[in-house]
Length: 255
Image (cartoon, rainbow, N blue to C red):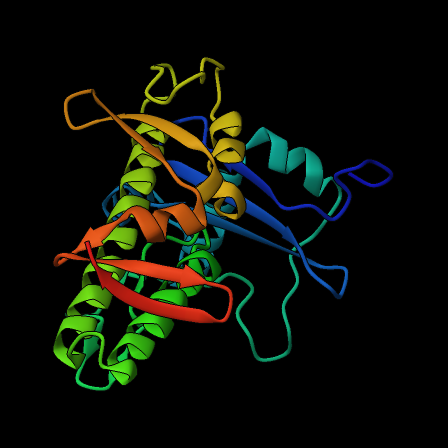
């Protein structure tokens, strides 16, 4: 809101019918990006009753109706109106954005960041996982060049490390979406409000590695994950090897 500490801040809000969430992202030119995210099957089912002529018109009506399920976003929009650049559609839609590479390393190459996988737009995990993958790539390349381990073993370590990082992040994403779909059930620790805004704040990717997150997933079994970026690397063992991280020195050592 203008004149507050949150001016130009991103706002994320769960839809009050538990079907998805909305982003509100102020942009550099004074406009704001507002998007609705939900499961494609739910979206298809919701759009069926619309009888407005034309695909663009149906999408517009659907979009505006779904925004009403996010009262916080509606308040922020105020008197704002839809706009588009010349030649572009006012409202655009896309889907199936998640992907993953078959492996993250091979002979003399490493894959990191969005080149390896993309999980979910809400968490915008690109920088977090890119840095994790970059550090793993750097130390495994250094270990291979030094001859501490073979290139094959170094590649397997990176593949396992990056795969583990993505899996942990995916668990958080799945827990988040389970909470969105069950807003009146305390699936995540310390979340007891009617809506899910506190959970969004709790699990922002900028501090994901530094927080303890208690999720109830897979038949409400608790999963506890606590990370410190450096300790996460030095304490983990993959294929009998762990990371040796020192200032100016990266390597792999036998566990």
